[in-house]
Image 1: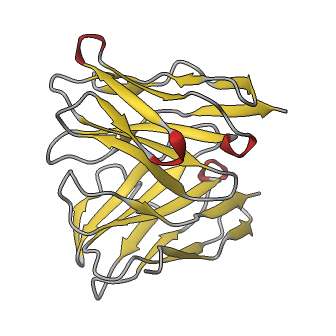
Image 2 (image 1 turned 180 degrees about the horizontal axis):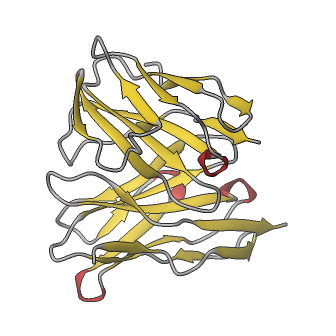
Length: 112
Length: 115
């Protein structure tokens, strides 16, 4: 069955530490891939997206993500986390001509 | 440009009551979506409009949920009668077109609590 998984429900990191949030998908073809962030009481904001080409994509707020076809993964990374990065992060996939499917989300907490 | 607007931001009702949510997408965006986001889960698509026509409502519980986008601009989502399990955040999103490359822009959502 087609699915998007985010194995980590909740991650806690210290401010200044590096971050990696995992996303895996199960689709017959390579979908378009997105990462969104949702701060408390807010809608979702696009961090970055991958359609084709260079497998390392840069996004806003210092985030980047790497697409690995062999692992069906699209992990989100940030070298140094800021307290303002505390939020919920969603991976989403789109197959051509179909609608978005969102993962369950990973909640990020940042320790001072 | 102005973002996606939604109202109300919060709503508390009792089960079996009715409720309506309103969404005004970004100007010029032909595609509009309503999502349901239950606490601790990712958004789940309820319905997609292209202009004023429904493209996908396969996951909309049509016995109690309805939605319309009469003039191809703003949209309303209604629940009648509400159940406890309808407690969630209802997100509206819009895109310039439905092409897969196009970004979705989300509104702040309406948090519904059904008692």
